[in-house]
Length: 621
View: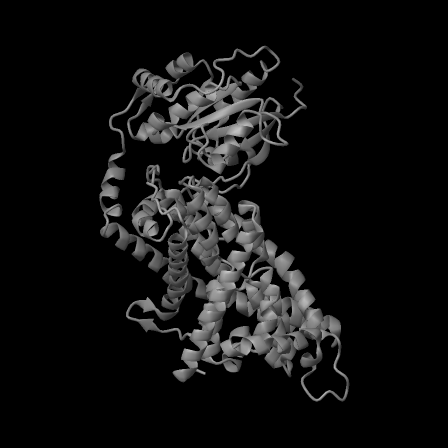
């Protein structure tokens, strides 16, 4: 085979074996890495060059426990390995990754992969962790018994895949030769279990089945009372930190944005260009960038929990609660992913085997408070909730925690209603692997935060910037005639649309500026912040008012009842077309899209109506 031709490698293995970390190490990619099942929900591709000069195309496939697929992600792995995946050629070599600390489970899958009869390399990963636990793996014996190359890897070390690449080169040299087929089809499960036990007895020496520190931590963290309290405390402290740690950085960004606006305004002559740059781009985009520190702090905690191995324990703890609501513990990780964005959360439901539980999880995933809501929450909380302490707690952090909790409780309520309506009321036991605890690797945390920041800034420089400019055009044109009695902005296209919408939204306290912001917010929730910043910058009667931050402007213009109503609106409203498109793709049903959009808008309007009317009755109007 010519070195100029990229050799296709398929990276397969059980969840939690370190496949994606190995993929990142080989390709220099920045795919998400975490210590729980369901991170890789679709195939990913990267490329790398070996020191020999040979080119490789590497596919990172979803984790699978068996080639007898029980879920959609396992079906992707099975079909691609067997060459049945639509539009994808079969891989030239399969790299099966196993966890050296958990060979009792992972070797069985390796035997299934070997039975496909394709060129294969077995990568025994996490050898460093195995040595620390006193586990000895006779790689030579495994290679002799399996009949395939067996190499050690440490995916978190810079040179941890050097031997793997060398063995891949050796295998690539023989690809043109006739392949010896070890087996055809998938072996009988009992035979696989027996062969796994034989290999373990022959090649693996293990002082104890689980790590001593894992057992010690699990005695507390899996306790039905202490464990749930620990989970609640962890989540509570995260939201406190989002405000306590982010404020200095946010103040710095806010001051820099204001200074840039003033300098640009002074440098440009008065006219449409100055208005576009200062009132449109700088006011709109700068109003969103200021919330980047809060988003990154939130994600730093979530990434640390993911890598530590704690999340499957949380899923186990919450299984009984979620089962009572019509979900399962397996729904926890997709729903947690939805705190980043509902789109990967919905895609992660492919790891849920039961179709009924999967559909319920998809329907309620948009109720999880995604990171795009955080700028809206932070804006409103900063403007209307005072910065004061309640004991050692931050009041603004308490309100943010309450908003997240409201989304979670609402999701459980919707799932419970779905459970009552469906015909099949059977329960499904939770089977979930609990990986060993690990200290989060600084490199993976840094990559995760860098990727999150890049995604956010791409949205700011892409869709948010484009919509901000479009909104500026709609708010600026047509110009009001000389005899127009009202504000010039009222005569614009956007002003007319906003005033027309107030008929519907006045009962929940929304003014015409909020109504305008809701429209571009359908593309991305955080656009609402840039939209409001643009609206108020253009509405200002003098340059000093236009240069002000958005928070004091809305604090002066809105009532507390309106702010509370808008906060509640964003708990429920499906202001993201991409999420609805993902629901359509995953369910292949427009009916489910209609149900999702309908119930979310209905809940948003009713909850905001109740909130606003009660707040007005209490004197907050």
